Amino acid sequence: ILFEDEFFLAIDKPAGVAVHGGSGVSFGVIEQLRQARPNERMLELVHRLDKETSGILLVAKKRSTLKQLQEQFKQRTIDKKYLALVKGAWPKNLKVIDLPLYKYLLDNGERRVKVVPMEHEGAQRSVSLVEVLATQGSSVEEESVSLLSVKIKTGRTHQIRVHLSHHQHPIAGDDKYGDYQWNKDLASQGLRRMYLHAYRLCFKHPEHATDMEIKSEIPTNLINWSLNYQI
Image 1 (cartoon, one colour):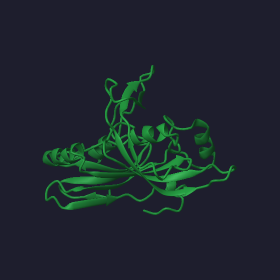
Image 2 (tube, helix red, strand yellow):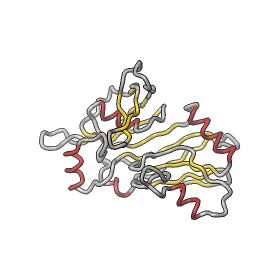
Image 3 (cartoon, rainbow, N blue to C red):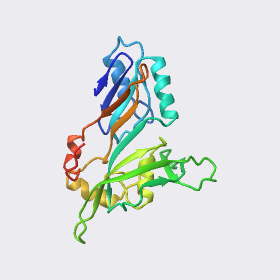
Image 4 (cartoon, rainbow, N blue to C red):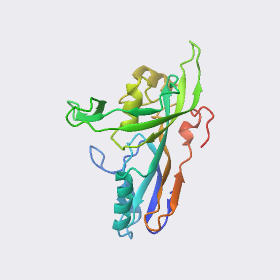
């Protein structure tokens, strides 16, 4: 738990844990939390994180808090930043990705997202702001990698993963939109999860409107891959 008061709590979710049950997962973070705290009158997820993504997750303890925080997400006044390790040297002049996304299902029922033209039926405008924090490796023998800070202005499903992959810089360890062989090589070197971490969240407190900044440190299983960057 990164923060808690009578209105909400902020959890540091590990990778590999779903935020809620469903789609073949019987138990997620919210179900575990409710079981651990049977005396809480209400515990509701304010937003979502992918199962494979680690980092800050907000849980409301009051109905009014839930509505107020979700309104901030809807109005895009919440500042959400993620760390992402990607393949290749990210071009420093590519700072804004404004590409519409479309959700669809594979034949096996699995959910996927892709970039489509804005006029495509079901397209949703999606905006990601990218900052290069560090780049390593440039020789032919060594694959370049870049550590990025990505701020999302819209919270679409798989937004960061698809936006970065569309620009030929897939996220390390991404089994849906990534580079299969590269992921395999990384796993043999010890990176056995996706490098996407929700590390910073700034918003107004839902009750007294004070400025809140919550940070999550880089998880221990990502530190060796963080190009010496520290939050």
